[in-house]
Length: 283
Image 1 (cartoon, one colour):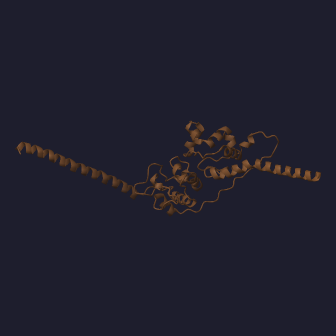
Image 2 (cartoon, rainbow, N blue to C red; image 1 turned 120 degrees about the vertical axis):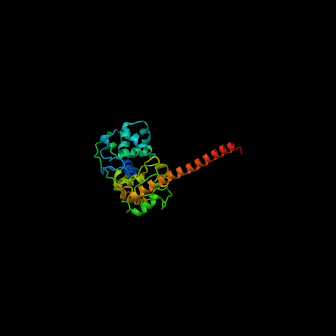
Image 3 (tube, rainbow, N blue to C red; image 1 turned 60 degrees about the vertical axis):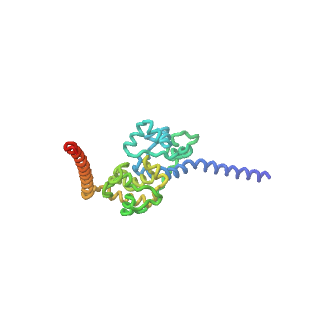
């Protein structure tokens, strides 16, 4: 009986140790998963800058409290006039979106980024380095289809509006496209090439895009097609024929306005002269 009791206690103890070890490992594992799901489209750890900065050595550059506030409420930090947040916006051109990170997710992310090493531990342990997995390569893009998607000739699968409604780019549209967003002719180089631009289109960090494309996201194929098209427009200039059309259209509209004004004014003068003549002749 005593042997059976001791065996039961031993099994229960081992099970408890396994559970404790799994719980202890959970934050780092969750942090890696969260980073891949929410951060990897704009940031790397040792892979260079993308839409946002490389986070290698973040613990040496930033205070933990600031990082926690910025991860959880970047919009509020920027609105407060924080100088670091303002400098990042000026350098990278895109504000970090508020991803709705919970307290538990925040703890896992800052642990994954290395801040857990700053906290004292009761026993000496050798920290294990977690190497983030490389994201799956994006499918090959089709430049021609990217152009059709950009201008709206082909519709996005999730019914998002065409890029041309807010942006312009070299070689698309006689009138140059929308003016709500910036010209995207040099976007491929500006946002760090294929990987960086993929991150921009996936994360949708811009305030004017987020309300729309967070509900109607682009597919992986659509992102790749747009990237391929914007790469072809990286060094492009608006063709002379397009500029000629704009000039011709402007001159034509101005001429039509002048002619219409002359016709209206001439009729008005004719009516005034007719009245004067009738009064003078007593008719």
